[in-house]
Image 1: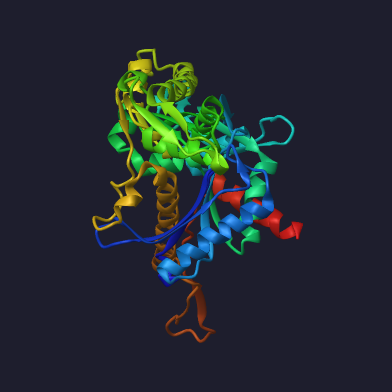
Image 2: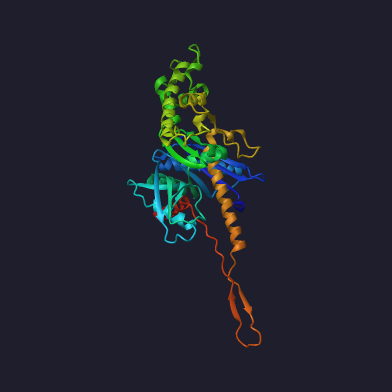
Length: 450
């Protein structure tokens, strides 16, 4: 791939699989050079339920993106979500042997590694360990402890846990589709990168990503991720309710939801009626838009109440945890009419729809700035960021790390062999994030499983 400048985000969702190829332009904005979409047939509620169908859908999306861009895709950044993801809070500490030396990267790594020793439920594994605040000796609320003196280093952590089998299944699908796995990212974090501003993350914000099978929540405060949750309801449940309530087929229910659906029943009059063609010569069905919006309203209200409960559990009602920037809605489900007003009504918080257009180049296709592509754009950003870091690291090593150079130093007036002097090697140490280590171990597992 051209100078490592191109990255690919692969969003494996419940309703669609999106492959997005892009690169950064001279203004540091993302230029999408190819996008491929395929109907997701083997994924239910964010979890792979049919390996063969998922592989076919991935290949279809990738082939389309390749033909549009004229580029060959080798590696992808994949997002994970699904109902198996859960999070917990944990505090841990280490006692340092050398309290007279300053705290450095290795101390933080020791502390993070200690959290990884937590005993999880069978079949679960820690995916993310996200430090919140640190405490050095008796001094609390420290954001960055590196460079400080102290004997006891303590921290609060946000720990994200997922089922190993579900993550490995996604890895297996990607590998079987002939692609390499460059990185795995939590989907709520990817969506957050695409639609939230740094100011919102500082002020306190809840991102609600309403997908087809799940609704993902990510809460930020003081620029740090504080809480994540995956609620096993999404747009598909609303479609199912319409299908059952109106006795129509799924395809018609989905079309009704997109074209005429509203989350606020008061908007429609009793006289507004839509006619749906009957099956195989049967009489057409007439449905009032008021009834349709009542069905949608009931289910959407349930989803929002679930999410709001999570926001309250995080501590939004406390003075310290108040989310000043309110709620940002994204994902395909955020396109439902009057959803923002209903969210504001139920939660009493300000809300806006999150579009991933802030990071896209000005001449990008308008369809790409739809909330439905927020996760794919976020995954693409993650991939481009990873490329930048790798390029920086290579450049740094070229400048800083010199190979051992032999120089001849002659001592005057004494006949003896020239002395070899070694120039010290300057090492650049790169600390891997846990998700990088996890991706590597997953790659090893998939390679050995063959």
